[in-house]
Length: 162
Image 1: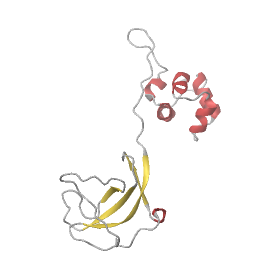
Image 2 (image 1 turned 180 degrees about the vertical axis):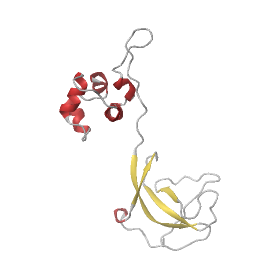
Image 3 (image 1 turned 45 degrees about the vertical axis):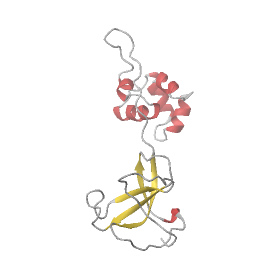
Image 4 (image 1 turned 90 degrees about the horizontal axis):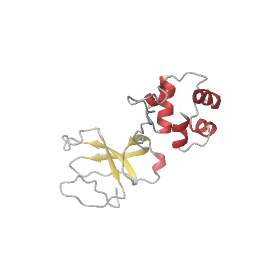
């Protein structure tokens, strides 16, 4: 576990404990030293923090079939979750009028993962014309920075009135 912590960039158990608010520094030190058994739940938390397979932590880097110590298995990074404001609705098929958005922080948000870099808003679909892609009441995400036109793409069109 010390190896995984160090490779993840935490110089000390205290540094790692500050990043894991629900595990106390002394508990983390006891887990590292082997003075306290590691639970599956704790191994999962450490695994996420250190970017390694929780099983590797649970079985203490146990020996592989050739007698050599197994290396930690690095996991893919967790997806970045951002809160996207749901600012309005979008009319599917026919043009509609809506109030202008003044301050995005005034709107409720929806947690969303794996969006590319951008300035995102969410809109609720109103109307049946997009049924196969986005049925009524579904939520679509719009990157306000993306101005590219793509063949057969779906577009949200807005003018100075909304």
